[in-house]
Length: 344
Image (cartoon, rainbow, N blue to C red):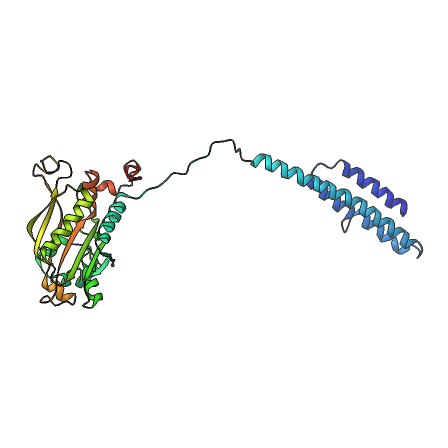
């Protein structure tokens, strides 16, 4: 049996010397050292040996097993190193290649204008308020002195979800919500930026969805002159220190008296050009003194308190500020257009 074990060792080591890959190595391990391998087969004859022979043969068997396992481990380690080297060579990164710069994004022009508006009015002591885009008929119309069947509602025909729920047509509902939340405290001094919705046909100057910024101030002894001074400061910070404003009488259900606000033409400075239709003025927003009924709806006594409000379209301000001639450019995701504003 000793001679058979020694012959097995010689045979196994000879095969291991020529093994070429890990798969063949695994097959040799099973062939010689597995449960049904050659070594196990020989050791099954141990029962026929005498008590004196068994420890001697057992020692030889352990030496044979150890010799074969040692070579298998060496081969396995060598194969693993070769595989690692092969993968490193295949997957290596060529650090001599020039780096690829990640593209830098920028603010959308409408976002930039909204931020500019917020910075201007926060600098004047205003707070920024927000409200729901899905609004009730009460806050969107009735609390703003637009009762049911009021003809002025036709100008703001909108998207109704139910008879009493609709997509808000302006950000003015937040003014009433803010006054009610203040519970009679003063001063109320907020601006309200946000999206609004109207059933308009899309063209160069209209969209079914656009952005507004509303503002409201409520307190004691608030006058039209305060409104004019505020708007003059705003337009000069937005369009330049040379800008002037003009107030024209108008009508809004939620303000009384009401005005349309014009600014000196951004392009010609008031000289008259094609943009301003030779008038030297461009309309940018509506404003007025808060209507007494709106004050009452907000929880303020119009005999004691007064206020002013204003509202502007962000897209219109952006079109004037950046010289954009079509509102649809802001929504078409044209990168060649948007990249112009990336570093403003």
